[in-house]
Length: 318
Image 1 (cartoon, one colour):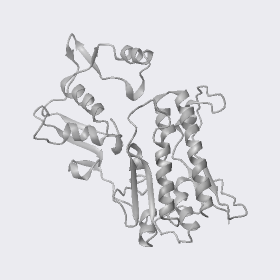
Image 2 (image 1 turned 90 degrees about the vertical axis):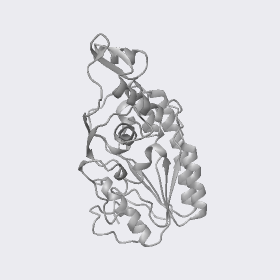
Image 3 (image 1 turned 180 degrees about the vertical axis):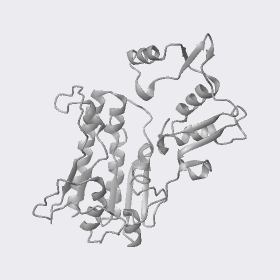
Image 4 (image 1 turned 120 degrees about the vertical axis):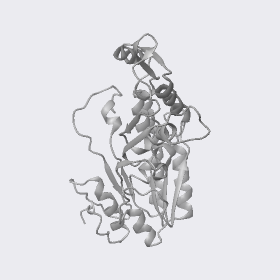
């Protein structure tokens, strides 16, 4: 599975599933343990083929098989396309029956148990209807976080909206990732439309945390701090309001931010929400907020009544 268009990874997964190419073992637990001992963990583990006897794999994907996919769409589209979508140029691709638990791509025309219809009254829809320019900026591997996830299933670009996609960094050991390029594009867009709405996702820390590398994760956080500092200063200088939040906390699960040492937490991961407005005399925020309150807060700051579909409320205690 890959969400950053690294087709070489998808190709390795395809050949593992269809042609049983990979490290051979009859002890899967030991094979994974050995990979960790070599410093290769999680999604970077190479394909492993479990054998039931010498040179005989337990299973392969063959003609006539039924394949059921049950995973989030953004990390599965490439593998589903490679494995299950007919391609006349590939003679080695098996003929399969496919069922998806959710719809990965409408163009695939595959059976799906639960199709997700786009929500109505989303933030982008409201801004577009009022002809307010908006900008969504992030790396390619995290673009669904600002489109499909952020707007309740909407993938299409709205009117008066610009979607800026920075190609994902293909190296897994560069903690700065594309943080500075995302920041630069937001600042240049701010000069073009100082009265617009800008939504940026800077995912470097999350991506580093997923690798399990504590030092790189700390470095990624430091790079992001620098970028956010510059963004806050520029937006406030332009008379704007800054809101900083996240969707979950991978980094908090793996490191102590003071010592940099690995930790384990059994508590839930509440996400932060910071509100910066240099023109106000201080704004107090509710302590019972949730992610559903962020879009209503943005609209309230703009003096726009939220649509009936939005169940959240303004996080500010006005």
